[in-house]
Picture 1 (tube, rainbow, N blue to C red):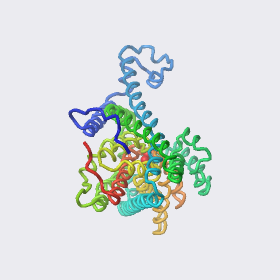
Picture 2 (picture 1 turned 120 degrees about the vertical axis):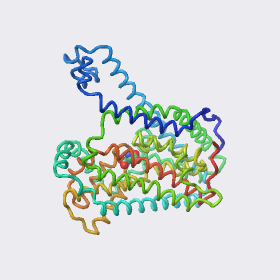
Picture 3 (picture 1 turned 90 degrees about the horizontal axis):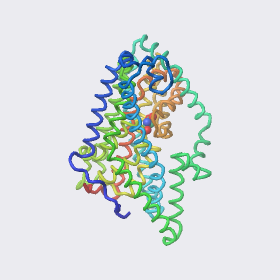
Picture 4 (picture 1 turned 180 degrees about the vertical axis):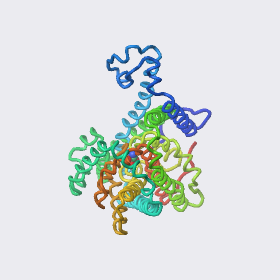
Length: 469
Ligand code: ASP
């Protein structure tokens, strides 16, 4: 693929990943301070009796005394939310075109179906290997740390009551998905109308469409395919140039997203299920800091090893964005950019592996599902047999592959795993209480896993280059 005509904006001073990390820390500090010190009495001190109505611009007599200070507070809160959402929305705008065009040129660019099969097989093998290791780590941690035995019955009853309604909704959605049946689900991967799939951002279907069009292009004479491939290359480069531009604003957006999250959610429920949270985060850390670096180290050529330092420095913008957005789909454009520009993965491999990985490769999600199901079984005093532990592992792996890269998606899918071993689905209420923080953490692993697969496949094909910057 030709080099981009538009070079990234000059970045004087601090590297982007440091700016994003500093923004993340500042966002947590500001959000936690607001959560701690801004209460109902602060609102009433500035003349607001009904804060919810005031924030939503609804008329209320209780807010008759609201003055300039209240207006400024509302404006700052609204602006903060706007900036964070705007950033994510712009990335979502890019997600469908990037999957479509990158994958078409990646598949068509491979040129012959044998090579495509080889790269595809390596990619799937890498996804499968990291998934199995992640699930094994989760089963061992869930069984031997036994986080469910640390929760007091009072805390359990309180959280169950608080989140029961929300949990019931998720279980209902899971039933609708399950009732669809596995054959219907598989059939649904191929869209009857690719334009419909694109219009509705059905990622799995967009991947399938791009794949089929790419294969079609390899089957026709080169000169007939060239204009279409050229168009897709131009569009993919334009979209990547937009990503680089948008990433310029990432530090501000990350600050806004995190500050808003911490200011509204707080960390209260975390304390009563701390052992469970630590177990999930510990498992994710093992995958991220031990499994992935070891695999990349083994699979990259001796002359150009992918060291952990190089990998994590290169992936920092994507990882911090995954953490703040909880969405691997929204992070996809940045994942591709990090893999190509910062890790030195050839564009055709990054364009091929990342879009597929975002839809299929979810190690963090699988690990989280296993530990959560074992945690709930322990909490309800249900003794699972060895066969049931294996069932939880297999079901979580399968369900993770079908989980979309969206915030909170796996809590819905978890109901299917819970039912497979007879653990009450109401338990999802307990998981929901702390899900957002764990979602942010597992999304980092999901996104990093895609870049790991890029590095491994590139290492086995032709090696990774030293990044340009
Ligand atoms: N939020 C996760 C992702 O986007 C999916 C999930 O586990 O809920 O990768």
